[in-house]
Length: 104
Ligand code: FES
Picture 1 (tube, protein in one colour):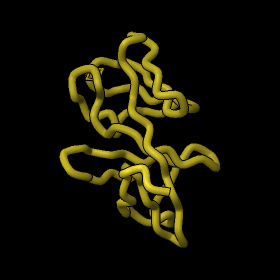
Picture 2: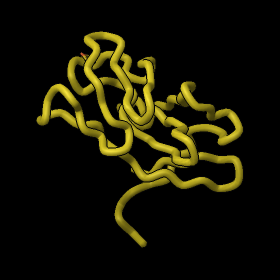
Picture 3: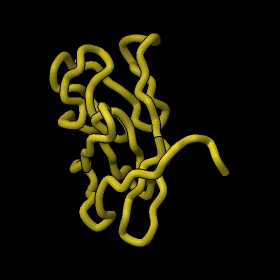
């Protein structure tokens, strides 16, 4: 499969814990990787509202709350609860052994 995307190692699966995302910079993007139960979600580390540190937000279920202005984003769908026009980007995640790879 050649879709133009590249796998980037962002961290170790053994270091990923619920409520403690892994962050990595890929190109000019800050990526945050979250463990939500059995799922691993890779998305924006910065908030699409005003570039706040979304990865530092509190997580309730699948929803993360940005620490700057309190807007909420569903980590599974990417949807913003306060603004339909804003959404998180969701990236494909591949796990190989203990390596977490994000495709973009
Ligand atoms: S920067 Fe995240 S809600 Fe404003």
